[in-house]
Length: 426
Image (cartoon, rainbow, N blue to C red; front, top):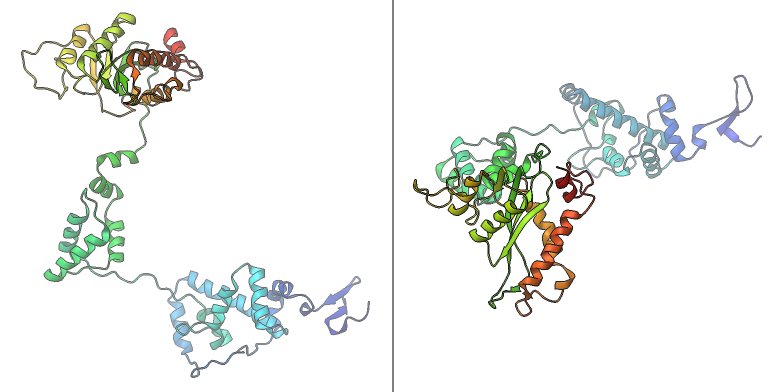
């Protein structure tokens, strides 16, 4: 067990074994052990590079007085940096090169080597710890950041001009509005901050909701709010229905030879989501809507409520005359009562192109996929090769029936059943 030299000795305490000097281990192990022996090491002069400048001097009392004005967090940071650099110096005293000592301590504490070197060597603007007495390292290494200084004053008149330019639906950029306001402020002699300071003022004084409403509109503001989920489980079948027109993308030819894209009015039950009645025509019109409503009444009965938007076809006087809040056509006292009010159907006008108001809007997406992309129409449906309207309607009827019969629907009411099954049970 001999041959260990001056770096090992037999234990003097009870038990057998050897004691080793920490310098006999590699650099990483020494860095881990050095805090225990740091206090016993003498202070060494670690300056191993020429300064290349005049001797550095500082007022020790001023340095410590400055430290007393700093928060405790800043002073603790300086002490932590001091401990790490003293570990480096302990390894240097043990015979390691500075480069190896930096890497060993950085590896042991999992920090970048460049950070240790920056604390030790410093920069031309920020002297490193090597230029200070060891006893002053805790305050010399304390962070010098002082937080943001007071911002440049902004005149209320200039702020009003800026908000008038920036908070508009045209949504000009911040840089453009800042430059335009700066030009006016120079002519008027108003105080005006930099663009970065202005951005902080906006964040501090203007609500994000106010900015979105002014620059993007109410619809963009609505999208920030949680969507409302309407509960339709309180209805029964045929108690409430909704309807909408769907424009197909395939070209069809009519018996009179006219070629165009057909339109279908669809009526859907709100409780079960089942498609109840539909009519197809060359365009959306009041006659198509009237016939679709007639099919609904003949097949299933009179609905208590009908949810539609106020399109020209749906809000025609033939169908909804006498209903309040139509906001369509000129209202006259002598106008006759429409078909739907006469039948006892209460008409509810809702927001157009809004799936939350009319679930049939969401159904239209699946129906377009079923009909427009049908294999029978793969090479037809253009102006050059239109589809006979009778064939198109036959395929549409099949796909609508398949839509109603598909199992595994995940709506709260269906719970895995088909729309047909839900409607039949109710």
